[in-house]
Length: 632
Image 1 (cartoon, rainbow, N blue to C red):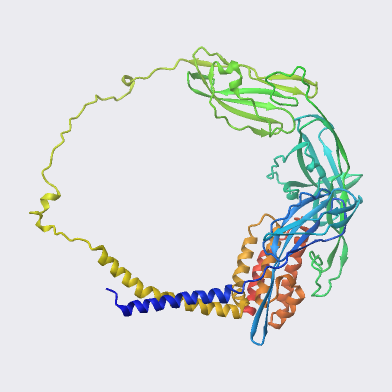
Image 2 (cartoon, rainbow, N blue to C red):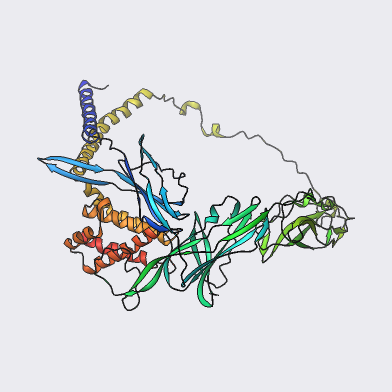
């Protein structure tokens, strides 16, 4: 039985535990942060741009660290691409007469890339931002959009595979950029891709041909561009070419607005500037003798195009027409051609047609009555394989009877764009020799032996566990007393758990007090690990721009935590001075500045460059280790 003294002791420990928990709640959660007033501002990287030139549009939110993503569907004069969001909070602490006050400014910003579709003074309308039950509206932003002009060094041309087509007929759009100078970043804008009159498909590009290829961001995705050479207006250029397949949905006359490509083109060289020039875009590329390339913004327009789209005629349209448009021819082969009833045969049908065949499907053979009546046609069939202007389909057939003499002609109804009428493409019949299937019985099996049934007697064994004992007296009755077991376990818990909770509570209170006294120390201790994790994640991104963004964010978080600098206010000048005070060497500072410049350049450009940025991640890891040695 539990004594009265023990009960009093347990009650005392329980009171201590609950009082401690209440103390922690009041001390560290009672001073809850008051809800800040939600504010939102809209900002652009440039208020004057060329048509087709992308620029950065940011929505800067204060008063919340996790606002809802704004809806920008109301922006009609610009193409909008979301570039991500990031917290932008700062914390500071003041001590007056022993009273510690922690000031927290919560913030977040959304980044977008806007590309103007036309010239003139265009307005980015007000955007609604919502967070924590509050909502706020940004102010409209006016952007002046200028008409781009073609130069002798850069030309952009659009080509269509044909000026006239029918609904459902693929048309190839070729985009070729002629380059007369080096560039380091570029961005294509194709207004036609926003036209809901077409289906858009990326043709397959075989990158194993030994040529050079680049992944080019375009709209919400990317295309593969081929590097080559070409001549235009009696001048040789380097070229970058990619293609899109346009499949019209309905008839009409389409006027395709000019495409544009915005780039930074090399215009000359100059000597290097001071070591701590804070212009993040300067010095991104240098030549072998230490000079810096001077790059200027260039926006190149293309030619305009028009496409006439006609409806397929209803008159004379066959009932089995399945939407094939173009000029088609067919051939077929089978193997083997000498089989027994039920043996599989492989039928290959080669379909020659328009320039683009990836989307073309062959009609199911079950719809070919002449084939269906003589052959078993499985549901499964292999996908077609494209080779040049042919697509090969494979199907398995099994003859149903021995009197089948051939695989009959297979038909495909199509609309011939050359003659403007519906036609039928046919294969030639394939002769077969089909034998009757032999019925194999058990008597035909070699090495057969008579089957003998063996009688198995089931015996009863008069032995078992009962025969291991002389009598039942060896089995004693030991009744289980659940109450006694419960009392013992309860006593152990009551004796051990309260002191254990008290120790844990004391440790938690001590840790919470230390963290409250210096809330930034914990972040500083963990900063290096977060930096390394961020750099490792940057190794597995889709492109240099995203990788540079993650490297820059990782270093800013690390330096802000180590040097007690709010992230939203951190500049390279602040970092440089504080690192110098911590005896960080000049060479390390130069490396840090170079990495920040490269990452800032890629971040604001938001695109890939032809030269690439190899070695940047390894430099970042080496720099992280060098700085950590000084800031430990």
